[in-house]
Image (tube, rainbow, N blue to C red):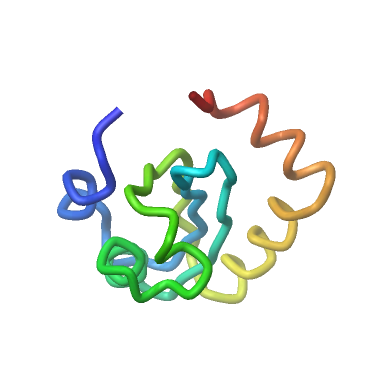
Length: 93
């Protein structure tokens, strides 16, 4: 899988939800108004929870029509049912 830096140029400037895999093997789930900018922040170490977990891998990305929809989807993905759904959708190393 390519690193986050190589993926960022292809990511749209849209609202969405994303899941990153840190070097410690833990997932970080977030929502953003502008996915490309937010992932650039994580890559540059400006993400409080992820700056010490670089290099990061983008393991899931979902574009939605609005930021409130992204926040709702983030809440789902952080729930027990959402984490279970993510386990079925992604392959972690």
